[in-house]
Length: 423
Image (cartoon, rainbow, N blue to C red; front, side):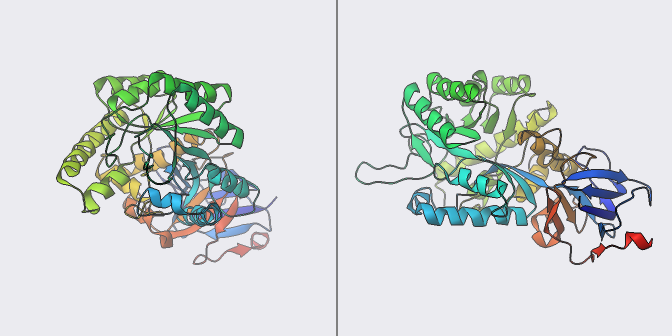
C-alpha cells in the first residue's frame, strides 16, 4: 500500500477546530495517522515525503451546485446548439478544470443533455479520465413557460431542460432519468429572472407535479434537487421531502421555519455567485430586472444569514457555467459567503468541506482531515483563514490529492522518496 507523509503542515481539518501544526500520513486512499508532535507519525521506508514548510493542508473543496456541462455559453439556447459528441468532450475538459482548481468533489445541479453527466461520472469512476468525485444530475424538469423552456412556436430550440406538464409527464421523465443512471433528479418549481412569463417570485409547478417526481425518487433511492427561489416553491418542495434546495433567496418567515425544521435532511445552496454576476457585473440589465435582482440579492443574503444562525447547512456553489459567470471561478463563492453572507472564513470552509462531504452522501468519510477519512486534500500556499480569496488562485494550490493519489503533485516542496529509512 502506497504511503504519503505530509510533514510540517498547518492543518485546517474541516471540523471547525482551530488550525494546528501536524504531520499527516496517507496510506492507500485513506488518512491513516495525524501526529501533532514531531516524529509521532511513522511511515514506511518507501513513503513519499512532502515537506509542507508550514503550508496549509485542508480537505478538498466540494462544489454544491456544479454544472460541468454548461460550457460557459453566452445564453441558455446556445447550450442546445452543441452536438452531443462535442458536448461530452467539453464536459470532460471542465471536470478536469474543476479538479485543477481544488474541487475534489462536485454535486451536479443539472446536466445540459440527458446522459452527459452520467457518462462523465462513469468515466471518472472507471479511471478513464481525470475529474472530481461526481454525483450526476438529470436535466432540469420544467413546465411550459418555466425556466429552461426556450422553445419558440416557429423553430426548434433546446437547452438544459425537458418540458413537462402534469404529474404523469413529470413521472415519465423522472423514471427515464432514473433508468439512465442519474443520482439526482432536478426540478424547477419556481421561475427565475430573465424568464418572461415566470420571474423569480412565481411558482410554476403544481403540488401534484412535484409529488410525482419525489415519489419516483423515493422508490428508487434517488434525491431531488429543486430550483426554488420563490417562498411558495420552497415550502412546496419541503412538504414533499426534497433534500436539496437551490436558491431559497425569496423565502419568507414560514419558509425559513420549515427549512430549520428540516435541517437534518436538507441542504441549501443559494448560488449567490450567479446573482452577483448578473446584477453587479453583467451591466446589461433593464431597470426593472435590476430592481428585482437588487431585492433578491438583499433578501437572499439576509435569509442565508438567518439560516446559518438556525443551524441549516448552507453551502457554496454559485451556478457557474455561463459566459458572465464562468467556470472554473467556482471558489469565488467562498469569498461571497464571507463578504456578503457574513460567514467567517472558517465557516465558509466548513460549508465547502464538511457539509459538502455530507451533501455527497459520504459524511462519515469525506470532507475532513481526520483519521480514517478519504484522502481528498489540498496543500495551499498561504492561510485561507486570513485571506479566503487565495483559494481562487490555482497557482496557490501546491498539491491536489484525490483518493490518495496526487492529481497535482508538489513541485516547489521537493518530494522525497525512500528517505525515511535513513532517519
